[in-house]
Length: 335
Image 1 (cartoon, rainbow, N blue to C red):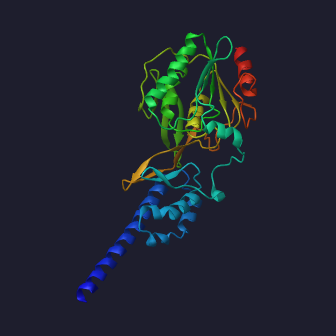
Image 2: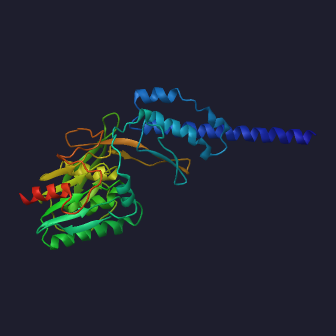
């Protein structure tokens, strides 16, 4: 009997320790989220303080913390963030009550289904005598070096065919990895700073620069392609729209300050924030909005980018009869 009693005590202590650990893990994750989140305003702090997160006491695993982490994401209103467990989504904003996304447009579901099936992927073509057209889609996974090479090779091929003005189509670029996009397009940018991001305290968080024909973020290069021709004096029209999001908006941010550049289409999807990756307890990755994109004068793009020429397009067509492409060709042919 004494042995059974001692076993009961040991098991009970073990359970309590596990429960305490889960609450400690939750506390650590939440504190990290609050420390780095761009949206951790006074109002968000009040909302988080009022949350009932006591369910952690019944959690036996990290996966069972999802309801509490979801509640914190909802309180922050971070529509761009994710909490990952073993690289699988664990928690994200599920309630839009406090969302910082102000885009109320609805997608064209039939069109977007086609995009997701890969119908409107990367394209490089000549549009007329001297206009090079590059449709840059989302980059999700794959060998980023090889993807960048593919994009750059296509740009070089159009240059060889006589392109000296450009349409960069970001209308189906919903994000992913920005590095192959910006390194491939680096010949179009003059040397120097193209964009910045700032944190919630208005401090510089990241600088986006082009140096020696390469893209750098905070002086770091992830990819280096062989330098080709410098095309930063060529006229460019950037096409953007409601499906341009996240890294697609990062590319748009760099073009905002580029000379001899016009934008056409719709406002972007309002994901113009940088999300970082912070590891907690090895298995948990926090990816939430840490900063917002700005132009070189410090204007914040808290609600995405609005093009110079607005043409509503829930379902772009992509041929020369597409209203945005037609407007781009008209502009470029006048130069």
